[in-house]
Length: 430
Length: 178
Image 1 (cartoon, helix red, strand yellow):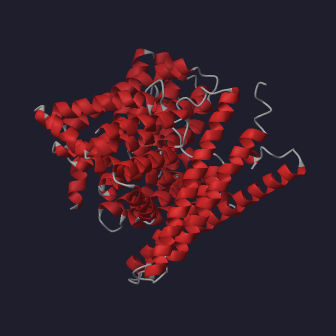
Image 2: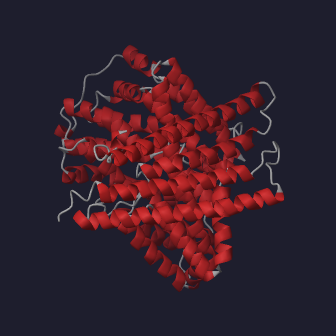
Image 3: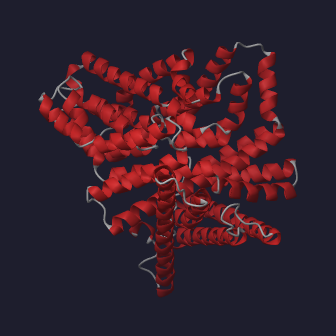
């Protein structure tokens, strides 16, 4: 137990000093394992984990889904998603902000990263909301919040990482994200409605579009919908494994990009190389995390904590509330990936020991991670927006995000109290 | 490429070093791109073959696995070279002047040492594969050369980190207060 604590302290020190996650996790995990068990075992473990992780069939979804998102983004479909959403809700008060949420949800259905979703949508939605005189607070808040949908609506990089660290089915996690994802979109739209009801000047209504034009706008985005239905539908029906679905999704996005003539050989190589680098960085982090979590496991600390908690005779729901509170506080200073990698080795055995469902908890973790992306002072999505719109002060961004944080906490409570919202769809998969 | 061209306008030997590390970055990036494209193609052909024509690609999933390994190994040195490893980034602006130089130098050294050690472990793993004559189950691809390639990639990653280290001292030393 002491060695676990010391290793966490050293790890935090290295991370705050600026050592990359992959190397800090791997180094601390390796040294601590060598001190606890022996250097021969530690060195064999490092090579084995590296090899097993990088050749893991279930992880092959990672580069393929990242590629799919990058290809769809490059083919300009994100702008059309926004235009189509706007055609349907733009005439309402706060309509452009609602359209931002809808377009983020649509983009999230082909992209597994929140930061990529926020970055993509912000370049399209922000200029448009500015033109119509939307308040900076509402514009940035809706983009930052909408961006978090990237990891909840499948595919999701965070779910892949959670799944591989806890040996939970990635396909089931993806499907479990659908209903909470729709719930999130609805609650975010409600937040926009409340925001503009309180201060109507923040989001003036745009012109109403005729139904014919609406369907014309929708015609442009059928490809995104088709990709999502093919990929996620295929996983749901059990026709594809997640890897097969990711391969088909990436190839489909490639075909879309070819059809739309947006691809040159040069840009294709750039997209592929970018994806390869993103994937390599992610896989490196995962190897480091698995080395570290291997050390945590051999110390037996998770069991000790579970025993300790059980002896307190705390009701499971109170224990979960405690865990979530811990995550919300942690989320204020850590970003998504680091939070998952550092906590899962300890928290997962604890939560499962209390009798909770691993798939349900996976979705709950994604939701708290989403919150960590938008909670001040350290929220990655807030920084992404700030880097796109330098002239909007951070305080304004913090103000705009607060109603979305409020509905996120409501959503978290709903999913904790009604687990079947998460588990219903994956249970149908059998 | 301008983002990694910090050594550009200096003495000839620096220019040569900058040029070769830029070339290595471009070559490895293109190799990684080609492997990733192959990975996508193999998966897609495997699946369409299985469901449409009832004839899957023999050992398709094994190729997918090995190709992912190759994508990561080809990608890692360029990730290191471009300083794109994922960090927590909480206090990244807390260090200035010489403090920042020392910090960046220490980090580059840690990355280099860890990469080199992993290269050595992969080399040992490769020797074990070679000793047992390990091959993949369906397609019979020998594993040892792949582990050796991984070791080579980690050596390149260590080198890339050393180039970063050199950069820290060569180009940022001038900006620091004296």
